[in-house]
Image 1 (tube, rainbow, N blue to C red):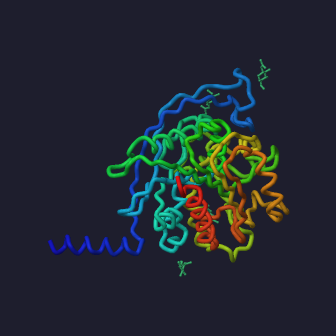
Image 2: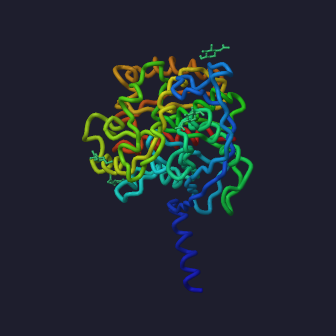
Image 3: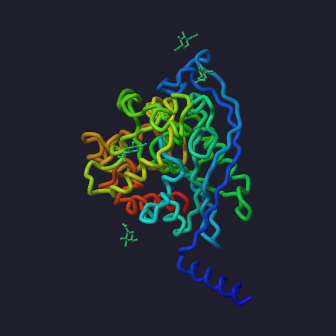
Length: 358
Ligand SMILES: *[C@@H]1O[C@H](CO)[C@@H](O)[C@H](O)[C@H]1NC(C)=O
Ligand SMILES: *[C@@H]1O[C@H](CO)[C@@H](O)[C@H](O)[C@H]1NC(C)=O
Ligand SMILES: *[C@@H]1O[C@H](CO)[C@@H](O)[C@H](O)[C@H]1NC(C)=O
Ligand SMILES: *[C@@H]1O[C@H](CO)[C@@H](O)[C@H](O)[C@H]1NC(C)=O
């Protein structure tokens, strides 16, 4: 009895401090039925293709996710967090003590915002189709959108009710996955708002070719990946995900990142230029990049923010609001360097602004 009272008191105290969060892992079966280009290197992911160059993928996949929520506080809003290529849900909460300062899931949770950080289709603990070419933007994006609809209609865990608002927060290819959904679903998108980090639109030919960045995962770490379709790739040199100035991040983070890397797919890499197509998404949108992003802020692209906003905004003509923020000092992986807390504050600020009064 005494024990019970004490723990109740303790949790009340933790709540008062706003620091108490609970997280649970879950796996949700999602049915996907989508047309993908027969050629996974089609840079527009089939959106400009005729029927004869498309094929159907019709399958049910398990999508793994870590759901975190503030204890005792209910929220109408949930954030779906979608990592980038060669990462997993762990990108949003790297589990080494020093990296406590790098957990967006914890940062948002202590500010009252629940999140579901997923492993994308084909990655981590989500289903990995035998054929990597079954994972392209049309299938990966549909899985995320159907998950968003699921969160709006169904309780995903005991005691967690369906949510009214779902905000999509992506990083890099995860942002491109959400962007693809905005293009393919437009005003029918289940997302109420999008926070796209580590991504700007990609002109055809603007990013380095797949084979200069990615190598077949089976060749890199046979112990983990022998026998995988060679279109499952990974990245061994991860330094270009960080700012060029090595004082901007912990060398231990880079090592941890290298040892916990996962796979990506040739198709997802090759289809990045699909982000140069416009869309009819109607919710509010922000793109957030690091000033030191070695993939997207090359040259002077991010130096003149008003010009950058003007050029990106034309792709989102129906968005309720549109903005681009360049976080000073951050690299491509905004969550993993010493500027992470500043980036997180920016993400949370937009989520709160986008969902206030709804
Ligand atoms: C369909 O697209 C393919 C590949 O781009 C092309 O070779 C073929 O001629 C097209 N077929 C029709 C009927 O337009
Ligand atoms: C983590 O953040 C706290 C402030 O929230 C700071 O005092 C501490 O030095 C940070 N730790 C590291 C390793 O950066
Ligand atoms: C993946 O599926 C496509 C379309 O059916 C096929 O052309 C390709 O050979 C398959 N790849 C592997 C590795 O099975
Ligand atoms: C990254 O990990 C690979 C093993 O996958 C290892 O061979 C390589 O030395 C590591 N690189 C760094 C910079 O830690």
